[in-house]
Picture (cartoon, rainbow, N blue to C red):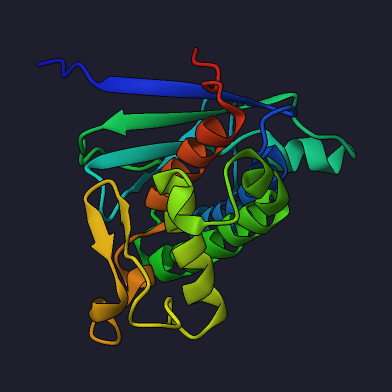
Length: 211
């Protein structure tokens, strides 16, 4: 029986705010996938349209990332004109092209610095567009603020017990949650990519192109 999936595919271009972070991230992920497959099978062949699926930890979604393009472009001293990133609503439990379970902790750790860089690079525009007051920011940017703090301060988000919590997609995290809970352990790389899409759209005021 054919299962119809609800899939949203985003077209990330060089004008998309987090294109630099995503392209570099994909070069890293694709390089690991190539090395793992070479070790496993003794040869590697990837084709346009090949992808790896990452299951979100918090959101009931999956993200499909291309396994062809960024490395090939980098070897020609170029960058892809566009990157297609797919959001699968629900979880398919479908087999992956590359076996990645053993790399899960590595993959999760790899995503966070790119989120932090995207947040910091756009902080001035965020303040200009909204306010210096963090609580006036869009929910996605408040969550990225919290994750940036956690990444930079050994897992700790809040300085004061009076600070207001952050809320995003069903996660509420405040000073009272520390130190018993660790924010960075509640999400993974797929969650962070979907968070970055929300960040981009809320800051620019425009939806990312869909195909």
